[in-house]
Image (cartoon, rainbow, N blue to C red):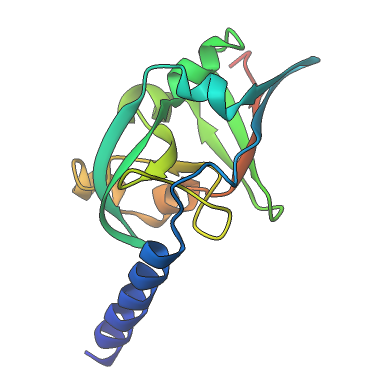
Length: 164
């Protein structure tokens, strides 16, 4: 019971910080680097915003129910002509994760740049945050493996092992 209470307090504090540090401008996001072998594409936020967006309304282990807006990861992969293998995503703080392409197809995950209509800042999961539809597929996705793949402060996505 004490652990649950402590968790609720931490979540409440995180929610308050999240709502206070959101910004209405794209201060955090200058560009996103996409890489496949020797091919590198730098996409500006404007170029990303010009693409069709998708919204996922979900809670995460770090937020309450939030409307996340972003671009489908599958749409980003079209820039690199990638449709299989693994993606390595890197964050500004050096953290990185690998996401199998099957996750992109199965869960229609997005690279979010807004939360509740406000651009994500570096202090608040930005410039980009990987979002799975946790609430929609709660029994399947609310597991540490998928939580660890919800990387934030993403600045680089690299296609790996495309020959799988």
